[in-house]
Length: 376
Image (cartoon, rainbow, N blue to C red):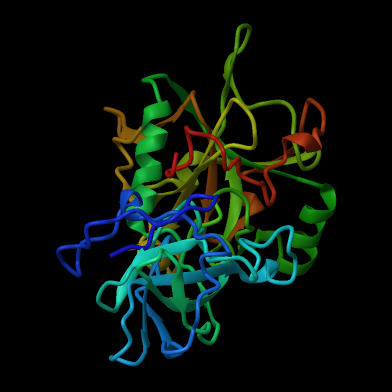
């Protein structure tokens, strides 16, 4: 059962039909309006203070809550005070000010119950929560308890449920337009490649994925890999080609797609996002079957069919060689979880310009975009 978000403004709480079952979430329609400060100035005497607040079943947008209170209390409503922990001392940025009534209100229902809502809970975010009980009096005022102790918690990453919703969003953007692909590539500065040659014998080393894209993507800050691009653009004169500009540096490591995307590789969907632009990025993870990176992705990310997906495909020709294709409607980023030596390809200088504004490093996702946010 879920506690809905209260609407702003005062007014009395309208009558509601209590949930029929402890397993039925309270919908937004079940949520009551936010109480005014005047209503909460009732006499708290007679209601015990909630204690032993416990949370469980924490997901990216929900948690189950329970607490202890005097069973003899006549309670009609629960108030839940929820704040982003980082903003707790900033009244302007806080979820709500502690001195005004709680934003989350529910009719008293059996404990534990579930608080759920992507409009006020974000994935991988620290929050604090405390609770208060209340009894609605005949004159419309409320008798309230003191606030419970404050409990801290962190919401979870996206599960496969949310990632499959993102995957469906990505598919809705797609058309059938695919372009041939021969190489994956990694742009960087000369210093990067010099460092890898001097310290690792020319082998590019995986590093932890940054926080770019969706905040709840499980690979952010957890999975080690090397960022490549599979993006191909159509040029009227040359046909399909790798973009000549680079966001990161003038050097480009070109690696044959067959080297990385072979029959011993698994391909996973990890993210869909945009950066306040008309075009979107899709983040795919390429692993070696059975590797540490593959074990991390298995069960956390949707597995794609290498020969039959909308983003990046590998198919065998009649002569036994492989052909590769990439979608034209999305910019495909590839996170490769294995070390790779520069001798597997070649390092060349780009023909165009370095354009830092094109960088997706720690990219901030547009939270208002209806095409790439699952809560829109």
